[in-house]
Image (cartoon, rainbow, N blue to C red; front, side, top):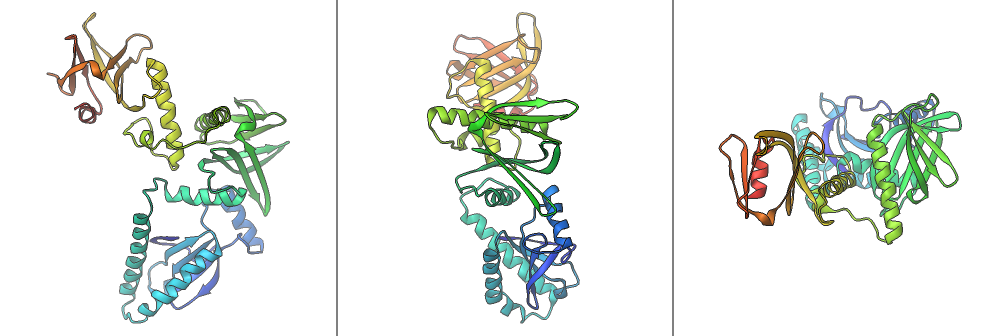
Length: 385
């Protein structure tokens, strides 16, 4: 794929030259089909640490200018990078020979590649996933021979214990599978578990497996430790296992809810995976419906901290306001102190309060509800008006 041109500090370290011309170099990453001790080291380094570069790339090399080389393309397969190489030799190299100034030639190449990247982004149908996620997703499919329909949700660095031996590697969580991959000095280890086979997931904090996650199937037990995001990984595992059970019962396939995941919710931070954001949004909406006993089709738009005026004791109660398509709800910070559900069909007037960042809601029964100290005041007002 064409990539936005950027400088690379060490152009030839950890890379092998496959093809070269007066302007460009096609390189292959050591450890991917190459032999030697350095290849073993690089392959292990890429497997353990979060580098994960694609194995092939094309750079505008340093002999063209006194500046660092520019990377212009990268690919997972040799066929793809070869197509890019042939395109450059046919459409760009003849033009570069006419330049006298190397800086102008470098700028021309950068503009040309950036236009190709922009055209590719325009042609794609608003794919919300990051480039890093796409690279990891492609690697996941190749490593475990997964079909194109199998979508990667997220990935985490961890350690898998096989008997009493630790294997440092990466845990890949997809819609239907949990996979683990490790490569230490050319020795590969792969593990694939279907979510429908999982019977129990639990967190452990023992002397043998401190801060670890145990996954039980009908026949085996697997231990994963040294997780940097233990809570997030455990929660996502539970979500995917429950989702697999629901699909097994209802015989329905999983589809991302684009309407839900695109809502302006402050509770769903940006994740590298579109599916991860979708699952987080579903979890927030389910908790919202359960807390306030709302209909199953109600989807949470967002929430914000605020205070509610309580007339019975003439005080402000601090808590959080939740907003969806048909309801406004409030829950106090002190559990079970105050809980309020306002159907929007019962609202007759929404107006600005006398205090700063205050909102006064009047119902059909002439009941006034004063909400104050919004952190996202203007966003809430925009949604209600």
